[in-house]
Amino acid sequence: MENYELVKDIGAGNFGVARLMRDKRTNELVAVKYIERGEKIDQNVQREIINHRSLRHPNIVRFKEVFLTSKHLAIVMEYAAGGELFDRICNAGRFTEDEARFFFQQLISGVSYCHAMQICHRDLKLENTLLDGSPAPRLKICDFGYSKSEALHSQPKSTVGTPAYIAPEVLSREKYDGKIADVWSCGVTLYVMLVGAYPFEDPDDPKNMRKTISRIMNVQYTFPSYLRISPECRHLLSCIFVAKPSKRIKIMDIMRHPWFLRNFPKDLVLGLDPNYYNNNVDLDFPLQSVEEVMHIIDEARTTIIPIEEIIEEQRQLAPPDFQTFNPSLDIPHQISFQPPTEVVIIDDEEEVMQDALDCMDLFDIDSVVHFDSF
Image (cartoon, rainbow, N blue to C red; front, side, top):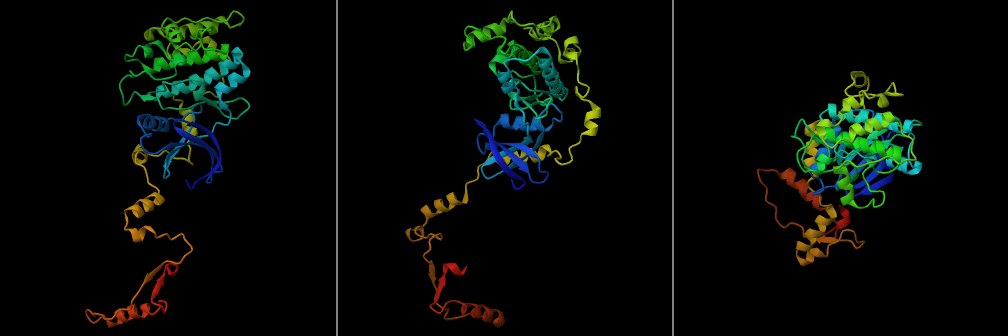
């Protein structure tokens, strides 16, 4: 904690609070997510940290480090000054096709890297995509709390994610390929950017979750007649919104699709690009080892009782005379002292004992030790 200073609070939720901090070592602004120690440090938190720490990509919010305070586990991340992509769409209403493609290309860039690292996100949505503060914003994927590493686990079978973005196979409560489910969520994100509405919500009853789920399972979506969306874009979405996972387009095929490749940024990193990773080593923040991170997480599962609470608890357990002792009061506290009447010398250590007796003479003449003498 001594390495960071508070700038301002930037958010709060069930997880705890998020704060904008300044790294005193580098003067860099970072986002720090504080999660209360104890039972809130669950498997989702552990999975988020372990999976996120292994990812190094320009379209993924950079994981920095974790540390402990007396009350919280703190996760330090790159600060994305541009806010959520969701807010940008809300302000704009919807994006042009070129704008939507610009962000979709970056989204697929980050997701393809996650998949190459054997990690599926499982909660891709506009609220989990941030933007940096540059004029041509760089998209940053965040929040890996529902992510799953295929290197450590079998295929996911739990129903997680945000309903409007969930693929049909996830709703079926059977084992599914998290990577293919991520592709569906990317398609929902693209549709929302183009239309300004969710593809499977009933326009006349958008809050009816039963209808939304039914439309997802039956792949019922349309494009508003007033929107001009190119045939190539419609084709790509039709390849994404396929109920049967084995028939759905794979992320590598999305990256070969003509609509996706149009106006493709030269600096976009796809998959495991060795040129990027060889030239972008973060020397200021070396990766904490898995062992170090797990030790911090395990320690965070225990709570630390503040010293004030310990003192108060001990006061309540102490005999009545001691319960009134309060060193913070201005009244001097005293311990009566009577000079020794007899000294036993052991092993002829007269000199040592004489020093001890000389120390006794330093006490006040009234034979009282005052609290403020210490």
